[in-house]
Image (cartoon, rainbow, N blue to C red; front, side, top):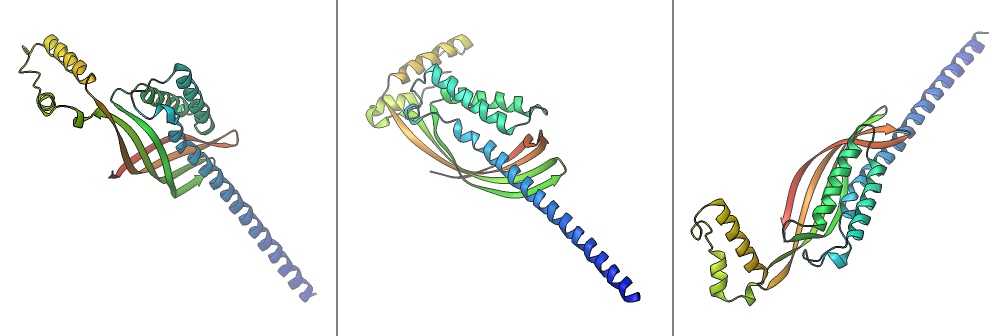
Length: 237
């Protein structure tokens, strides 16, 4: 009778131990699944930056005019991507839609003589993933490579005297100093420079950007609710 009780006790302990192991295993599997889904969301969001770049036929020079239908197509593409990864409930989706739309327009109508030719992510390193129920926090380093085309003066085709004159223009000395005269003079100089020979330069830039993401589970999917970043420029060529 005593042996039977001991045997029953041992069996009970083994069953309980087995149940604990199973529950731990289920929890671990769930954590792994969550981490995989979180990584997928973060990587997808990061890749949107690559999609901001226009097709190569428009990135050979910042002076190339991009058709309106191409710009609208690009905005729609980026908008669709944002909806996959950002939280609409938190308001972060609306924030990102505005940011990325403005980024597309900035590439289409550059205020300066520069346009992105390529924006490529070479590596993504997840430093930390903390999951707390249906929320999570992620820290990730992104190794980015950027190529841009810059339109500048072709100094080899401009006479030295004229080039020296352009480089040493003093607007304040050549005008009365009044605002309207300065504005007029600036426009005259801009028109003169437009007529001079141009050359396209390629600029390379590498950087490491550390992103800090907050995420929440919405309708069974992990969505980004906020982000911050630290920018660390790499060597430029």
